[in-house]
Length: 342
Image 1 (spheres, rainbow, N blue to C red):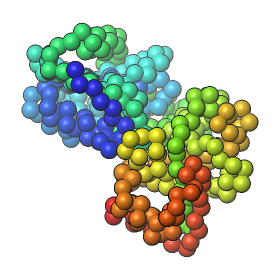
Image 2 (image 1 turned 90 degrees about the horizontal axis):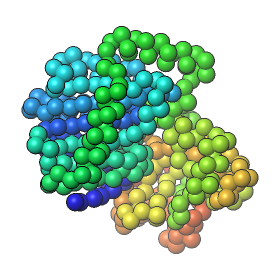
Image 3 (image 1 turned 180 degrees about the vertical axis):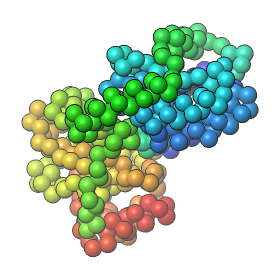
Image 4 (image 1 turned 135 degrees about the horizontal axis):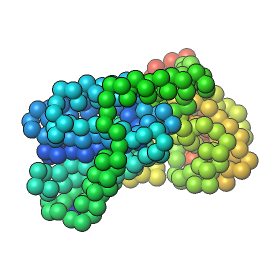
């Protein structure tokens, strides 16, 4: 059996799903949340898959109203074009906290097969943008582990509700009602209403080199005292008081993650900051999210040289693990050009 990790740093889950839909004839997708933008990532490949004779089942949840009604409507439209044995979509009742994420593929005979199990929901940011951890398993022959995973999906699918237009109408009313109660549903990016991006400060870009992971205790503290996790924000920790004071929502953040083998460099936007004395990694924390329309870049000589030419990185990387701010009237435009060109 072959195993690998898909973390969106090089290959994305969207790329992997497109590849698997082209290789196999049976698909079973079970995810907690679906957004319309996420479905857009794979819809063309899914339709082509079924036009070739493939058969697919999709299962999702509506727990906490994170799934978008427009995504369910789109799935209804697909289902109405095909017989139930070609494409079937079901929804877990709202009372069931369905939180699995599995993408299963196999040939008609049951093998070869491929399974993706991890953290990626069917949303654009989680398929192709944010840092995820999904394990990919492949084998040419049938193995008990794949049958066990597929049985788990089968049991969930059998207990769910067939997706129908009237179900979507009822869910939309509940979804909109929840928005009215809370002003906006606090959700991960591109699941439901997105939190508005802060206005970009075109005069400032910050670099940060990460050499250690944020501890689980710090993550727990953030989840207790903020809504960052629900909004899909990532966390930067270990700042000094002075560095924390410099950060402003809307700053661009160039981040190199040296915890990963590929050391990806990403372009991000500062969303918020908090002081949490209970955080073991230090009380000064910052939340950020991936800048739209950018993808991770490998930390190579060409990229580093281009960043040095903007003045963002010094020739001696003495700012490892620390923040470094560069202010200029055109700095953000220069950095975006670097990411577009490399």
